[in-house]
Length: 422
Ligand code: MEV
Image (tube, rainbow, N blue to C red; front, side):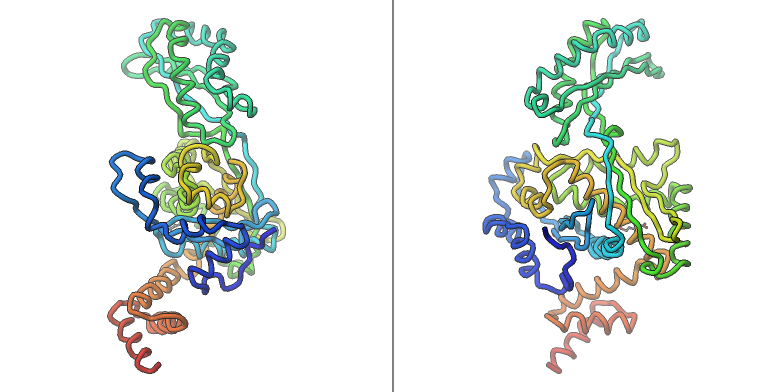
């Protein structure tokens, strides 16, 4: 069992951090080398992943610490270009840690395929005929993926709706597929295409679109965590965190930024694991609108003891087999670092990060504002750019923050003065 609580992780060198994680999670030399030298990512792999490949666009990969998810400590790899994201998630996770960390649940691993049928004169009768043929439809779909079926998954049900559009009524059949540990787009799209001729015969219509829906509302993940008021800066701050959440829940302008902050964490883990960030993002934002208004993906309340309790619920279409999760060597190493075996485990960690990330932003906004934290990181980066090393970086950062003057020319001056003194 690892401990996710590593004091001074952020003060270690990049090599020390990677060595520590590699030792704990038993990464081999090749995996370590790949992560450390990801700038020289193997060309044969990038070239086989996409068309017209010319190279790679490296995004920094970091580890969020202090996460305990369902009683287990976890290292959380995050790929992000945005400063403060990993620090904020780690900081909030540390505040949840001593109250048990994050607890999660899932509604299942069911993805939805959509089949659009046009040119039907009797859509309601055609819908009924589809239901009559449900067994044959599911059987045909499952014949396309015996491996998934042997693992306990496969097509399990259908649903038919009539959409009255301006042009013509169309029949939309939903195919529900339990995709288990795969994200499932390939399995669902293959089945949807394979079943199209049968649907045409049953309906006497014309099937056009056959494609997965990214509104994966039968694959919801939920996470919750408790935070003590004292750890967050007192009752007034907590009340304003709840007010900030209410603001987002009632105002789409604020909800968009609030949910963007949640996705800062979620997309970083989704990307690090080689999953499809756009699928998860589209699903999250659509789910945030299902009440008819775009709302917060999280909820913040006070429990009976006066603690702040947060919860999050959103679709989480991620997998641990197939696609880049298996073909991208760094994504494979990342799953090993996370000690993840199932898509459900991965979804749980991702939801926990989203919740922590949201609280990090709300706490900063309700208390000192977010620029203070951002400026410290900005100053650190500038100090490093100015040539500072080791302990000097902290000294220069502190001085620039004290002077409330985080500009490169001033940081350059402070650095030169310090280097002269040394
Ligand atoms: C910045 O990337 C994210 C925040 O704007 C999120 C929020 O406002 O809740 C800080």
